[in-house]
Image (tube, one colour):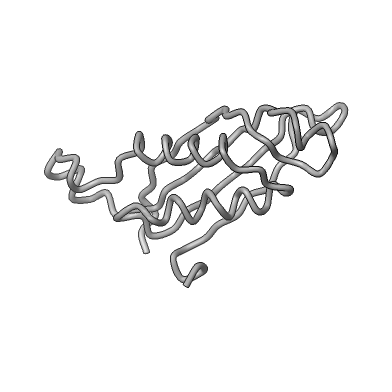
Length: 122
């Protein structure tokens, strides 16, 4: 496995996430950070998009999913996002952080961090 990675930082999406009644009906801010681990050597050598992961496509898939899903837990949403990221060619493993800004008084945000590879969804 490689330690090369593409990072998508502070992707702010509005969606349904939580167990409280108001969270089930009102969209809220959800902050997503993703590290896509992939072999980027050929892309660096050849300067060719065919040898890398298209982060714009990945980000759009994440946004589309978060806006349409209605998960109860950040853990489940993070797993969904990991699975989506791993479906893109070249992604070996993924690190996903899902945060709910302002979820806990006096905290900037609360969230979960997971790391997954394709074998975790086999």
